[in-house]
Length: 273
Image (cartoon, rainbow, N blue to C red; front, side, top):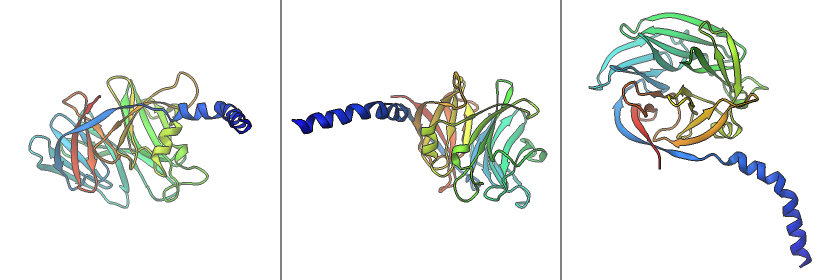
């Protein structure tokens, strides 16, 4: 009996410590993504973007342009890999393709935004951030601002003492002047592992959707009411492993991801239980 009361007393003492940890770990599964169709694309190793007519497959210093109806490649841009080292993701903005680029896995890390003409696939201009925050992995125009993600890494491509926990979401004005910045939720950082956030876009529901590098998951985040860390609302399960994604330009609740092993573009629709 004495042993029982000692054990009960120890559990009561531990409860205040355990409870917050359990609360932090609880992030609901919101649903999953069901595959609608798959298109082969040789360049589909980093990310995908789209507009109502075309799909764009991204591979470091190469971007393939595909007819979204036929799946045929109709255009290609290829840059000097010594200059265009690591284009990680892109999104269409009007008639332009806006891409996040870094020198990953080289150090010191530097980053830039690169613009392309979606009609001709010609490189138009560049904005350099230089070193300081990390490697730019994605950029998204939303609510009159550029939302940029600067990834940090453990091991190769990282700059100690920073590691993946130093990954930042930075809100910037139209001239890329920083306005605000936030860290990512701790449980999402754990899911990133030694890597970071590879893709991100705001949804029409006013929430931020983010993918990591490896896990087949889509994290739903919101800005905090106070403080400097984003809030994790829940997670969708994806049929592909991380990397940069894009919302479909035609169908609501559809998104495009990549299967980098099969080099394919994958259209899916988010479903809830």
